[in-house]
Length: 305
Ligand SMILES: [Zn+2]
Image (spheres, rainbow, N blue to C red):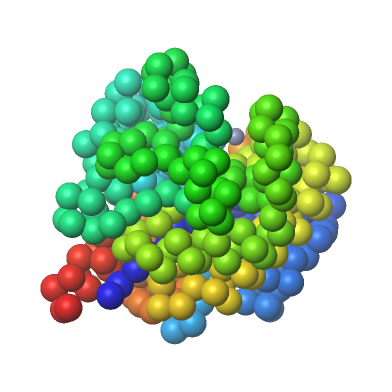
């Protein structure tokens, strides 16, 4: 049975091969070097193989200006050219119009309607759940994508059972949000937990956004930690995810260029591995291609089963 795991990393582009500007070059994590023979930089270009593929993916979508989160993430999770629809790139959290696009076209809703089990691995805190219940805040694109499918948000109970991953991967940020007593997990253990969830659902997604946060701050000490965390996490996912098509992608550049605190015009890396990765990679050029590639892969599998 075909399964997909989508790992969304906010604000991760393919930048210059320059250790003075790019944390992915300065800290040169083994994961990307092992896969591609060098750091994850723009001049790698497109890599297609039966094992692992890399597609430099256009995040601008034909609209001038710097790509932003609300429209870019909507493009990934719905396949709709949201910046074109809105006439510009929109930052932060989606307003009512983008929320409507997500409600109608969200990937989890579409797959769930086709009878597939879908889930998000992200854990939400109790405070956040209460805000959700009272509709007191604007949700991220990913949260709207989950809620639009009627899928439950994972909570502290799932975390305690090893069945969730917090947005920072290691749980170290939880006390900052008033949540005490949750043991930290290593990036590798978090990666194994994510792969385990992905093995039990047709479609699983996970969102990490500390890359975007630090890309806006340009803090090299924090960047080193983020690179190390992602390295351990992605290495473990890669080793543990068996017979699962895994896609790692982003909504816009940012973290790859510490000479600026804004987003960038760089392409974002879409990394694919697992069964069918070459075929799926060949269908991806822009952010809007990711959802259709996943849906086609999963639905084609249904017909052949
Ligand atoms: Zn940002």
